[in-house]
Length: 133
Image 1 (cartoon, rainbow, N blue to C red):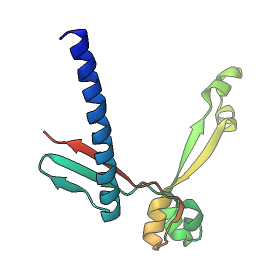
Image 2: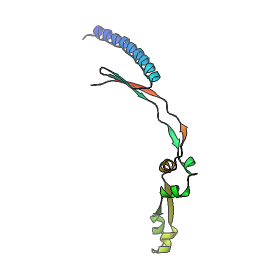
Image 3: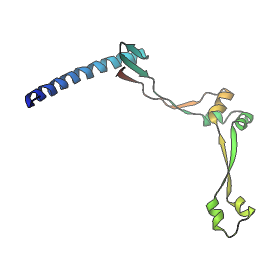
Image 4: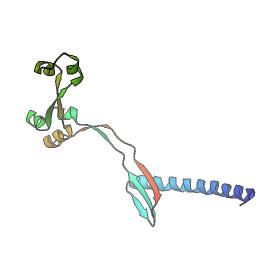
């Protein structure tokens, strides 16, 4: 391929790329309205509704205490670096540098208590078109 053939090929690529981009935009708009993945031949236009972000902790906090306790657990965390700084090692030193951490699975609390979470943000729907092999 010489330079003039290269230039012609690049211009042809540019024009075809513009046409394909316009066609992709049209397909995406229709699939977005349909709200459902479409497959024709070896082409798939995948619809994604967008991911929501939920707050489970706020609504779950009003659940009955028995349900909250069911999905909570407590762990002890010892700061060994602070214990090591002090001379010797005693139970009192370890307890002085130990803290209790309580964790709650708020998703399970909401499910068990039949409490709907609050939607904090809603993702943007999208369409991705690809050629399947």
